Length: 296
Image (cartoon, rainbow, N blue to C red; front, side, top):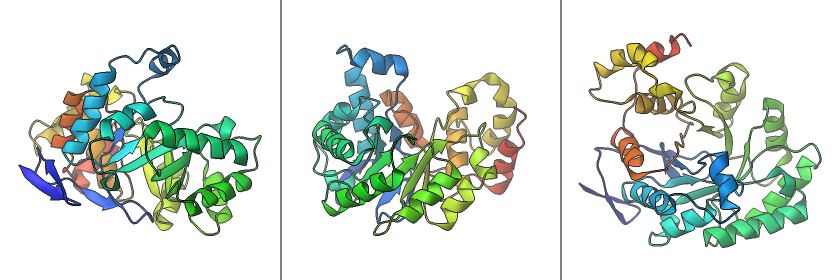
């Protein structure tokens, strides 16, 4: 079927792609996005000019966009910004929400400015929708970093500010340090096996302050696909025929909280199409409890 989103014709393979307000950004993003962290071995090889399955990865991202996914996450560490640039070149830029991250060694104001310019060049774009601090650094004054990030917004180079791998205190300190712009997102390890943010106050704080949570490793490093968990997921498959374990795990994240945007890895076309097919699934309270009750 063909649907229209932001004046862009999209070849849809599902009934309804779920779009939500991405925090305070003013942009509606697909609740299921695409991540481009492959693995450290892949990253290491790129420094020797080896980009394994590069065309396959580009095709995967293009397939996602063609079918309605508009949220794409990367980082300067991943060395995938050029791959994203190639994938998005034939699409209307304003319809996409591109997020990237700055490495902790580049958080000093001058280094930050150079880093964002490098990312802009690699992404071949005039602006970055979400610029995130990848990891905190004890060697840099966070307030000065955030102040420079606000200037990057004023300069039109980035639109929103995010952080990743921050504690609750650091998230609060970051949000309070921002004067003209508030924190838009937090990226953390969050999946059905790792729910610390539900217990340590981070999820509650983010919901209260309209801050998006972007779970990385939303499939628990693929752990959800292990046959052991079928005994739980089969209870959900009685209601939703044929849904794979991985997509139950993704649906769980976006069903439990409306400020959560999952970013499973977009490494091949088949996996992206599978995520698209089931991206309109919202689990009910009973189904969510089944997953919450899993013994790990």
